[in-house]
Length: 108
Image (cartoon, rainbow, N blue to C red):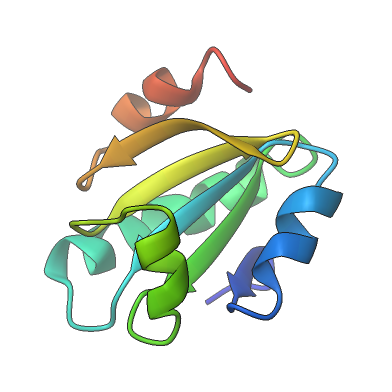
């Protein structure tokens, strides 16, 4: 995983989200999830290409079940875009890069 994707835990989540100056896309995922593995390289690319415009973060739902419950993540991958500390967009399931950018276009 690249340095441009931030790993969040239950201890670091609130601070990271509230202090972000740009929108932050949080990927709720798990190691055993096939679609999560498919979308991971796309998120890596976006983290580099959208640097300064969009921040990419990941939350492993097995390591942070409280966060998954708090944001009602029922299936993974679930991507939640936070802007100004508030969840503003939710994308469920793996999507291609263009489809994902299209979903986020009004926010970034």
